[in-house]
Structures are given as C-alpha cells and as structure tokens.
Length: 138
Image 1 (cartoon, helix red, strand yellow):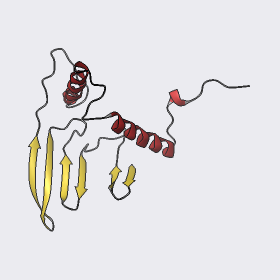
Image 2: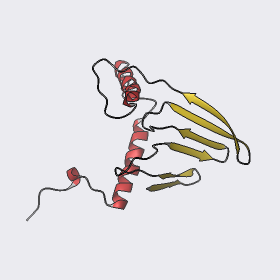
Image 3: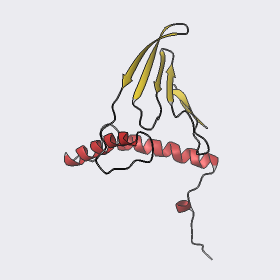
Image 4: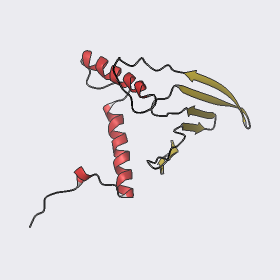
C-alpha cells in the first residue's frame, strides 16, 4: 500500500498487488461527497458521483461510457482494454495536428507521476534490473 499527502491539498491511500484479485475500484472522497470509478479501474465504463445531502445521505448520479469498437482481428488480454484506444486516438490526433504533447495528459503531469513512482520505489527498495550497474571498476 502507498499513502501520499499534499500540503493543504489532501491525501491518497493506494492498495495494489499482483498476488490477488482486488475490487479494482477508485474512490475519491471529500467533505461534499465522493466519486467512485467502477471496476476495472484501468478502463472503467461507469462513474458514480455521490453528493452529500445530509449526514450519511447522498444523491447519486451515475455516468456510463461505452467502450470503443475493437478493430477486427485485435485480441485483448485484460477486461475492457479496448478503452485504451481512447488514449491511442488522442495521441494520433495530436501527432496529425503537429502537437508535441496531449493537453489531456501533459509532459509536466507525466513527469510528476514518474517522480512520485520513483520516490515510492526508492522508499520500498524496488530496483529494476536495467537500473543495476553491470560493470565494475577495478
């Protein structure tokens, strides 16, 4: 598990594993309610927004998103992976328009996420084989 805290902005708790099947959902909570991204979280088709009405009572709005049609002959290995086609289409569109980054996911955001992941890996001692030096100085 991983806990993140941003000064004056909030915190996050993450649980992930390769050793079991998890509900694979994301929940974002605040003082006004919460947002639940339904499973599978990597390519959801439904989001529920729950707005606080009264203590313990919420008004829910459910938003559904259809998955794009998979090109003929494509094979998937994970549920809803055809949802990744939205990312591919966004990149293709940017390339055709001569853009060097997608406005939906900027280079700065990508680098920030990589820094968080690198910091977490360093704290728990995860080192990838490509990061190990294979030469020695004698």
